[in-house]
Image (cartoon, rainbow over all chains, first blue to last red; front, top):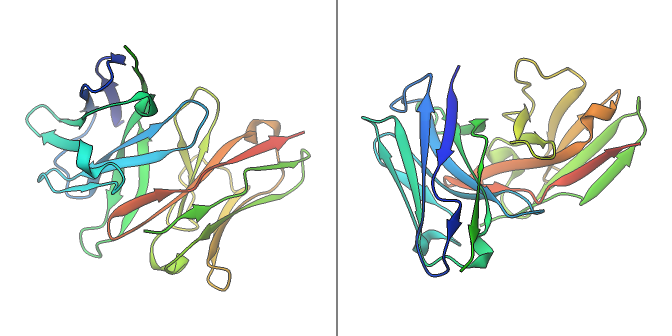
Length: 125
Length: 110
């Protein structure tokens, strides 16, 4: 059964760069049928998509975060990573990684499933 | 890009049926699949409906999804409500590979 696990610092100082890694187990990150995504949820608020990556390295980012986000993939380690620069308190959130279904024949995308358990990142000095 | 608008909250009694709407602000709701996620407090979201109206294995058939082009909206309907259905529900779609989530609806079963 596929599992995703987020890891990284739980506390980041303002203006610094938030770095998280998602480790995929029970399946290959190099499948042509999936993208891999980062989604965040500020405390008490809704879900916000950050961006997604294909095993080839192709990326899509939320336009509102694009200038600060970099998502990368390491197929040899079955991991993908998130970097968010110049963080502020507004970036405090639970960060989730998830697999995103993709039909290579039609170009249609589907559901995010499964999700990792999430990791809380607090931005504070 | 577009937005997905959901009611902030809905409530209904056990055994009844509730429908949560998700209205797309621009572009056709039918042009890209809509998903629905359930999130209980302290847990990660899980999928209850994918590709407009498909149920993952393990999701009871009390959950159903539909889209209505005339109102440019998607709906999640839960019948035979149970107290365990109390949760936040989010719709999600995309356009040009940009993902959008609705703001979420808090379902109270009382």
